[in-house]
Every structure is written in C-alpha cells, then in structure tokens.
Image (tube, rainbow, N blue to C red; front, side, top):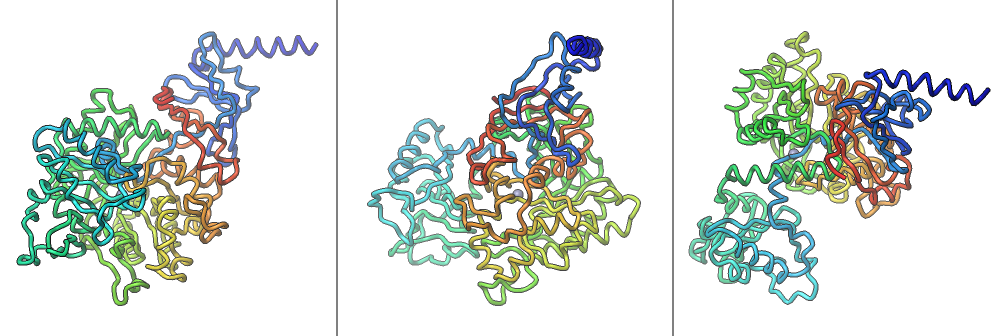
Length: 568
Ligand SMILES: [Zn+2]
C-alpha cells in the first residue's frame, strides 16, 4: 500500500513537472539554505527557471519542480543565502585598486622597490606607477633610515628615475613619492629658503634636516601629488571596471550600490550593459560633486532598469561631512580629544535642502554622507522639511543617510519615524571603535555610535556594506563585525557595546532584503521567494550557525546571478 502511494505521489508530481511552468532548470538542495524571510527562515531546496526562483520549500516538495532536464545541484552541506548586496562602496575605486601595485604583504623596503622596478620596466615612458598598502612597521630586519617614522624616497627614486611613483601607506593617511612625481608636483626643489611651500593645511610634507622633502606626504598633503596624476583614460577605466566586477563575483556580491558615480563612470556602466559585460547588478548614486550632472539627471528623470535589473540610476549622493579619524566629522559638541573643535560641514546645508526638495519632486532618492551627530541631525532636518512640503510625492522616498555613524540620542528614533534608511558599514565599527572613543568619549560612544540595534528596534531599515576600497569588499568580516562587535582580532572578549550587536538573521537581512529595500528592489531580490531573481551566495561554512570566531574563516565558494554561476 505504502509503495503504491509513493508511486502515485511521484506520478502525480512528475505529471505536474511536465507542466512547463513548473519545471526547473536547476534545483539547489542538500545544504543550509537561508531565505532571509522571518516567517520561514530555512528551506530544503530552491528551484530556478531562467533568471527567477520558481520554488522554495521543504525537500519533500522538490520533486514537483523536477523535469527530465533539470540540473540537480547538490550543495553537499554548504550554505546558500540570497545574493549579498553591497549597500555602499565605490566600484571604480575597487577596480583601480586592483590595477595598482598591491603592497599589502610586503615585508621590506627592498621588496617594494623590486615591485616598483618591475612595474617601471613594463610602463610606458612617463606613465605613473601607483600602489598601496605598505607599512614600515611590518619590515623585518630593516636598516633603512626613517625620518619621522617614515622611509625616504632616495632608493625609490633610483629604481624609477623616469616614471613618477606614488605609493600609499596601508592606513591611507600618507603616501611616498619619488623625485619624478615630486618634480611634476612642483615640490622637488624645496629647501630651507622656501619652507612656506611646504605648508599644507591639514597635512604635512615631511622634510629632512636640510629642509628637503623626504617623499612622504601626510594627510591632506597627499593631494599635492595626487592632483597631478592624470585622470584615467577609457582603456584603464574599462580594465578597472572589469577587475571590479570580478572582485564582486569572487566575494559573493551580486548587487552593488555605487556611492557616487561620475559622468564618465556612468557612461562606462552603460556601455558595459549594452555589451553584456555588466556581470553585476549596479544601483548607482550620481555624485553630488558634479552639480551639473545632478541637475541633468533631475531634469531627465531616473533610469530604472525593470527588465534586466542590471543598471538603475535613481539616486543622488551628497557628501556632508568628513571622517572621525581626521576629526572632520561634524559634531554637536567638541571632540573629546580636541577642545573647541567640532569638525565641519563639507557641503552647504542649503544645497542639501534644495536637492532633497528636488529629489522628492523628481523621484530621486537622496543619499547623504554623514558621520557626526551634527551632520546627521542637519540632514534629517532638511529631509523632514522636504517631505513635509510634498507629502504625497514623498510617500515612498526611501532617502538614506550613508554611514549614520554617530547619532544623537534624540535623533535615533527619527530615522524610523521619517522613513530614512541608515546605510551603515559594520566593519567600520570593528576597525575604528578602538580609537573612536578618544574622539567621542565614553558617553557619546555608548549612546549613539554604531547603534545598529537601537535603530533596528525603533523600526529603521539598516543596511550593511564595506565602503570598499576603504575596507576590503569581502562581506564576511562585516557580517562578523555585525554579530560580534569585535575587531577582526576578536577584541574585546564580549564585543564593544554588546547590546548593539545584530542577530545573525538581522545581519543577513542587512546584507540582503534591507539592501534591496534601500534600492526599491525588494520585489525582485533580497530573499529567496518565488518570483524573485535567482541571485545566490554560497559559503563553505554555515555563517548562521558556526561558532562566532569561525565566521571569519568562511569563504564564498559560488556566486549565482540571475540563475547563472558567475564565480565558482
Ligand atoms: Zn563611501
């Protein structure tokens, strides 16, 4: 009897499988499948047809979707989640970083020189050689003379006499230039007599005892050399974008919110899309640094890609204050470690008000960078006025504050109340929290810094990301930071302000469905539900269940975009 029933059961469902609409091209099964849906967080299988999910549920129901040509993909215990969405990063920056010399693991000045020399031999005459990631404290058995703790340019200039070189320190806060680069920047002939040329507000050109520049440009002084580096040409930008797309695929990122694209980047994205080269879904914020471009977009209206879901431009990025490290974040009260100093706005608040009003009117989301509590408040005020002025049009605005790092107690509930999305990067807490307390002091840190759980509890939609290339694009460290509130070295034992930790489900949602919502795309992605795009990230470890410290050892094994495996 039982046999007969089983037979009937299979017969019934094989029947329905013959029905074209229900037959999957592929079924993923036998793994830890997380849907990011609270009502049904786990599933036994997910069935895909074309670029969409057609089935998700208990393993026993899988057979319904199985046809003669269905590919059965055995996950072998691996973990499948909705495709991870990077909510705030810089795609061209990632690409150019990939093109430049990677000096991150160099252990001596000699090793750096060797790499630069090879690059110089392969470079065209006069071509710039750029690199990033060296750190003199990692140099073993170093006999190099250091001035103010940094190496000098002499040996660098010797290995690349004709090609200008600029290599950034791992911290990103200093860079070393060779003679050729300094010549081009007009600082090579400096001596004791024209010391004033060395003055750069907010930065320092380090000199030796004779007053000659050592090649080190600190903080804002990096711009002295940076500004003479020629803009990238199309060939290099194309190569950079190709590299960045590969980096996304390799890191399990299926969608990417580009936080501030220039005109030339947008042109490049369009040509990639037209040539079927855009192997990632891009959600683009137009850079507010180009007011003309912003006006043009406001005039012509958003580009919403509702067919391929590859390139949508419906957002404007504004940069409203600086960073905490350089004390540029705009605070309500002075920095704890610099009396009387509160940082400053980097953009006029009238402009923010103007763009917010126009954004509401023309259907553009506004995404404003704000780190300090004053910047966050001022922007919330401007947004609020714009919403109040046009309540009908503002109904589905989804305006965002990028970073929303330090928020005054009174402003925390305003995000949910106004429907403003805090687009945060958990990894910044991990990297910055150890010293951020010097800037803000204990009370402000505890009350309002990186307050993910307070925001979530109040009903705000919190998104996650890395701000790459500021931090590496890999989402795993940021996921780990979200749930542990520890540094990547696992410090402190219980995590910083542990009550602000996200649960693993919240962290998963911050990287998937919340990010989709923040781009008006929650109908099409962000969770494993029937009808949504088949975008998946597959990990070798169960990031939702393994020991917290094990999360950091997890690796992306496969990335699937629209049903196609783009990385394995
Ligand atoms: Zn950014």
